[in-house]
View 1 (cartoon, rainbow, N blue to C red):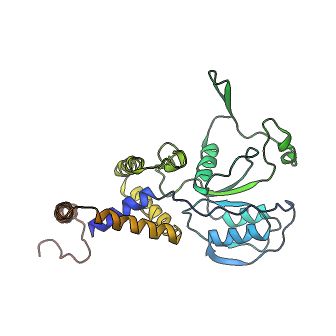
View 2 (cartoon, helix red, strand yellow):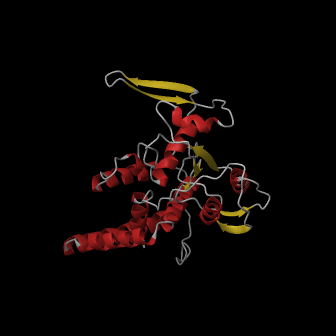
Length: 294
């Protein structure tokens, strides 16, 4: 049991940000127009909001791993009002309207959500960071008042931005976040910060070590939320990715020598017995185990 639990943890930790299908480009509809309002009650958030975006011809990006059963209020008159009404009961799941640089390739959903979450969390009202050697700057300005139709002029800016919005729905405090909201899989730790095509076995090992180390410092309640969050992310993977992960596990075990397999088996048995004793020392009764003293 311990062997499979640890293996599952490691797989979930390493593929928590596995690639999800990209939304197809769509033609934007006027912000004040709604095609229709389907009455959807108690359906998964991804199904409800994807259908709502398709109905209104909007580009929507959903952060993978969000789990909620939602209802689309028939009172919604616009696409954005529909998002507000759907997400109102979930204080940590929010949406933002995002404009990207012209000709910028749209990032994967998990990476785009992480970028938007980082910007929302920044407390600075304005920053310009310069690299004098390269004669380049990075700038950030927060909460600037804009006119209602400001997006129409974005393509005339220098540098130019795409005036077509991408609606990003994300968890502002994911279940794998610590009590103070700091992500255990932040941009410095998760695979989305590693350049495309360069994620390798050593990266995954480092990510997993950092994740498990951070979880070890959590209290029991926070750790349970983190594990639940990873389980949800794992179950939301597409079928091909799940099969490939299983095949990788089979291949990994097949590559072990008989001595390595036997050593791992003995280590797992010893750790399981040690854990059972630790549970008893903590006064915790395990299912299927006789009460202490019997």
